[in-house]
Amino acid sequence: MLEILRETEKHPTADWLYQELKKEFNDLSMGTVYRNLNILIEQGKVKKIESGSTFDRFEANITPHYHFMCEKCGAVIDLDVPVDNDLHEKIYRETGYKPIRHETDFFGICPKCRDA
Image 1 (tube, rainbow, N blue to C red):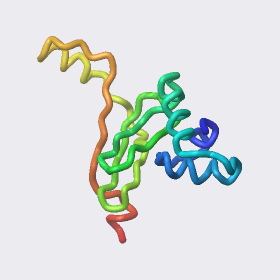
Image 2: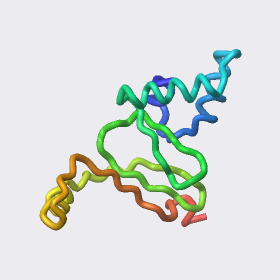
Image 3: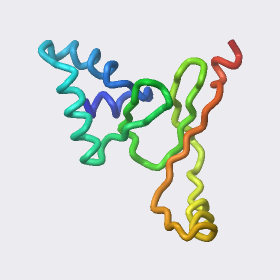
């Protein structure tokens, strides 16, 4: 499962992973997929992305990065822009809260949908 997540640029759902793994493991259940995803999340090897849709998505890219969610086709894309860690200092200065990390997602229309 981890290998599949590392090899795809998609941010797949548990069902997509199930369909991919089922090709090799006939007796696989969705419960097994969810249990293993939860173990990988607890180990810090996989992140769950709550994309605003009804289905959570997962990824093996655990380095800090931003996402763009297309509201038309549902694509979740990793953005290759630097993470703004200056936000941490700004939040601390203005609120007194000490951020350790942050996650920011952008929502809109991807170029493929915009040009269609």
